[in-house]
Image (cartoon, rainbow, N blue to C red; front, side):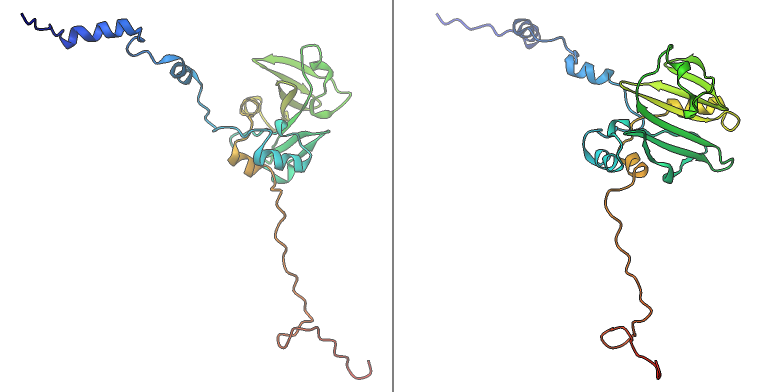
Length: 225
């Protein structure tokens, strides 16, 4: 006698296969998807790698360590391109100017540390011999002295400082600029650091070349001379 095999309904068979194979729960994104979802987004775009590429070549040409190059921004302030340069051995500094008041914001990044013990010993604005007061403000230090004030942000192996004259720039503006300090992305690097490529040579026009012939200099000597 021939027996007919029973065919399980698809709706019954599917759960059995999932159980037998040890599949993940439906909708589980897995480790890689979870990590991507939790990663914070960068509003300024990806920062340039300090050890390679355009940032490294431009910074090293100036004598600046690529990892010490930072950029910032504040409402009404624009970069003074001629101010960009080396600080100390291989640090970095640049200044932003308010177009209406001519107030200056100075960004300075150099190697070192700053703690509760060393903060009062470090002068504001490189003015040695002046009294310095220190106040903790979140992860930064708010410092005053010699008519200037400064926000100092300790990083790994270096300190980022944004300073200005106390009467010229309010503390809240200084704080905004300090918290906005970050490593530059490719576009910011291009605007911040001078290119290492030499400028094209401009031909020199000589006034003694005649507009005709082979262009040889006119060495004609007048009578008697």
